[in-house]
Image 1: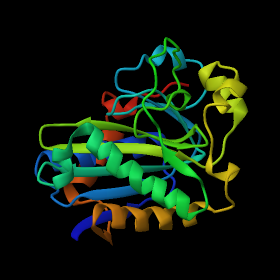
Image 2: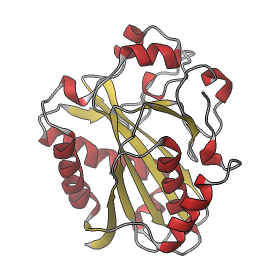
Image 3: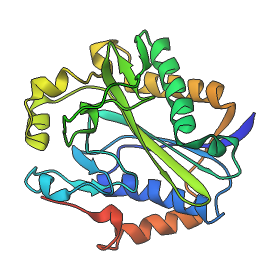
Length: 254
């Protein structure tokens, strides 16, 4: 069993959340943080995160903070979700398992945690190609993402640098149909037919989900979690990002 750092943050604003994930990844890539990390966090207010290649113009009138993730993928509406992030360097055995191997290991543990809460979760299976296009991440499940009764409840995105990787994603706790309509300009019923959330399947609260996730990740990743905060270099990088309007984590539209 290897030592992992565990960070459980209080709700933070969108820029701060993305700055922390990015700082952890870059510190690991630079060899400044050798211990793999699991971070669980929430959002102080409703916000949208978009993939690093996604066009921000689509979200120019949503009236919410919009941040660009360092990972790819499509947009996620935050505020009613629990977000998880994993950072590890190339020396960790999981790094060598490739993109799908990492997704599978993390999703397996999420499925285990949800099942322990009485939620009938499973993996997404490969499906036929489709011309259907949506800006919403939860509109279409990808391979190894987590479903409940065929609907997506958790989605992840991954970024690999030369010496480290970041995987982060969200587990939906509840849903606001009005915000879905405002952000994605879609029929919320169509989106909600493709996605689901924890509260639709169990009365378990957020703290219970956190505890189950930590236990499941510990078992699935053979990890001994030690709770502590950011290292000095990471904290400096976060402060710099929060004060620099040009950085990736500072994209914001009102």
